[in-house]
Length: 203
Ligand SMILES: Cc1cc2nc3c(=O)[nH]c(=O)nc-3n(C[C@H](O)[C@H](O)[C@H](O)COP(=O)(O)OP(=O)(O)OC[C@H]3O[C@@H](n4cnc5c(N)ncnc54)[C@H](O)[C@@H]3O)c2cc1C
Image (tube, rainbow, N blue to C red; front, side, top):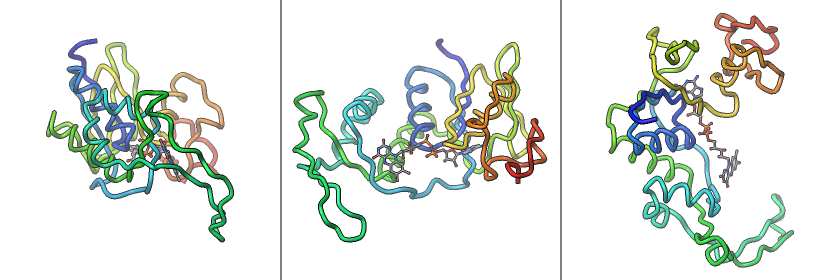
C-alpha cells in the first residue's frame, strides 16, 4: 500500500528495522519509543546470513561489513571454567548462503538503524512517549499515548518487545486472550488494564 501512515511502537532493533523498511517503501511513519533517550543496551549479536540479507535490503550492507566481525571459527565454553565444550567448524555461510556470519555489538547495530531512520525522516522517531491504549477503527487505528495525545494512522506495528503491550491490547480487542499473550507487571498497569486481570499480573 503506497503512501499510508503507520505507527510503529518500540524503537528496538525490530521497530527501527520496520520503520526503516516502511520509510524506504514510501510510507509515512511515526515511531514511538517509551524511553527518553536511546542508549547502549545489550551485548553481542550473531547476524546469520538471513538476518544479514535483511540488513542489506535495508541499505545497511556496507554498515554491516564495517561494524561486524567475522569469526574464523567458534567454541562453546563452560561459563565458569572456560573449558571448551564444543568446537564449531569454520563458517561456511558465505559459500553456502551468499553472506557470511557476522558478529556485531547490539549498540552499533541499533545506532546504525536509528541513524538511517533519522536520515530519511528526522521527525519520525519520538522518544519519551509510550503506547497506553489502542483502538481499532473502521478507517485505521487510534493509539493513545502516555502524554495524553491520540495518534491515528492506517496501520500500527507492535515492536515493543517480548512483553508487548500492543500484542496484549490486540488480543484483548479480538478476544483471543491467553496467558501466553498477557504482559508482565512491568508492562501492565491495573488502572489501564481493559481486562481488569488479576493483581498478580497487574502492578
Ligand atoms: C542474551 C541474549 C542474546 C541474544 N543473542 C542474539 C543473537 O546472537 N542474534 C540475534 O539475532 N538475536 C539475539 N538475541 C535476541 C535479540 O536480542 C532480540 O530478539 C531482539 O533484540 C528483540 O528486539 P525487539 O526490537 O523485538 O525488542 P526490544 O529490543 O525489546 O525493543 C522493544 C522496544 O520497545 C519499547 N517499548 C516497550 N513497550 C513500549 C510501549 N508501550 N510504548 C513504546 N515503546 C515501548 C522498549 O523500550 C524497547 O526499546 C539475544 C537475546 C538475548 C537476551
